Length: 189
Image (tube, rainbow, N blue to C red):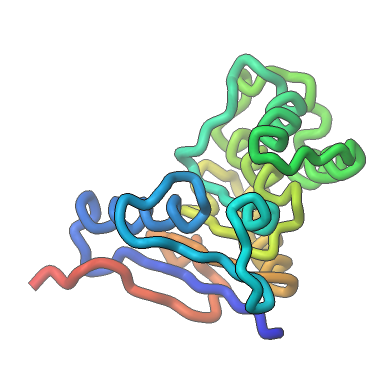
């Protein structure tokens, strides 16, 4: 099976109007919101997947996703995992992911005390909790410092080796290493 990455750029589009629609499409693709028209079907190895099964195979990271500020990093990961219906009881996996994103030492701190970069890294931990075969990243390096950007690029490289990576990006730095690109939006003629 061949895996690859895809990067979508909003070039030549009215950013507020067209790119907003495209981001909406990524949210639908990731299963965060429902489509009002048409339908999306999911399959793995040409076998149809229902929503419950599909969500075990997808991870999503975006700057506009939020955690509960009044919960700790650990509580957020456990709760959101249960809400997603996958209920990872593997505490070792959660520890490994929080260590990977350099937040294990802050696991018992309230997320409301985290910087925007720390929250972005926590989003990566949540997205990776089920080792997704599809990882969708919207603006993957937003709010990250140099160390965080290096980490994000590492995650992207690793994902390309083991699954599918889809990136929505405004900058080349966000999408470095993509195998294919799609220009989204309509030309401003």
